Image (tube, rainbow, N blue to C red; front, side):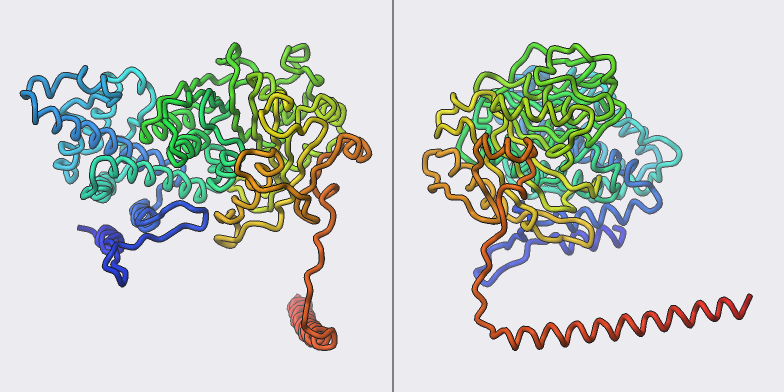
Length: 536
């Protein structure tokens, strides 16, 4: 076993606490992370010079293969306790329980036994093709490039060894969840490694969690018109489970224009056991709306920010633009109106957009925003802190739309919009990226549910510097600009028992030190410049 694998299995062993129970690390964004981080690091060491954008398909494809093979083998073992070998090899027995049929040559045990063979790449490609041929819903989804000459077959074999240890000693119900967590964690890890490109397929979990906890998709149709790798759906599914609902109570629909990302979404949802109708075409939701006739109870979306080449010149008279034709040079208000048009009569939506969408007056955007406010289409606006996203440093916000606020079943908030300024929340998890903690998410979502007057929620009250329920008249006075900072005001100053003279002396000392450092730096730069001049 190679050193990265040894290191992983050493790190991944459950650690005992003082009570003798295995402890679990908790991530900053609320996920229960045990060995996922260590596993990702071990897998990344095997990557060598392969680009993360290529490597992610190699690794995620193998994790997916392990998942469906484990599910198949568990069902097969159960069948063999009651039936003969012939029945245990009947594909219909598996499909009846929504389990993928895995041919013999594609089962993980067969691949694991051949992991050290030079032909392992071709064996995996053949396995992927056999699975697609036996399961119509996976046709065209699985990666089949393991035999390509540029892929190190020793690395592939070591990855198989590494992945073979995932959930090996767990009960089957727990094993499926563990593999799902690993898949999701790896998606996040690869998004971080790819930077801007990674953000195209992955929305940070803490942002998705705020959207889901705000809208609470307990039942009905859930839709994402630009679904990326399917993170919105995974979190919705998790929300239903955590709150005692039945997974069958929600139906998942989505569309994605990037074929590679669509494949990631299909695998991500399959690993989670989520049955979903995810459509792909390269024209996208604006020009070829695959679900045009459907309306949805909950819509969650993180569209590309400020897209300028969305083909809006060909859609000037589209029925979706009920608040005004969006500008050809920016798709933000096209996304908002596409999403609003798809809402069911009591539907609600949460949309991630660039901050500029809240105040822009260019190319008629201000008029569209005004029309949406006057139509009472906007329920809540949230300003987000910076550095939440892998793909961009552009400040972002959340728009919450409601098809009919008078028909919500909660407190009548017609003629009002809730503004939340969450820019001071979150914490840095590394030098470039920020996340919301559980407490941050709860602070935001509890405020919204209290404002809506939901059963069991606390009483709502404006908090200076954080939240404000603004009337339509007040929004008009601000020219229909929806930036929360305009409405929430300044936070109340906290009492400070430290005498002013003490605080002033400390600040003066700090400033003196900074001046001294600046002078030293300036002198050093001047000396360098003079040296350059004398050498010339």
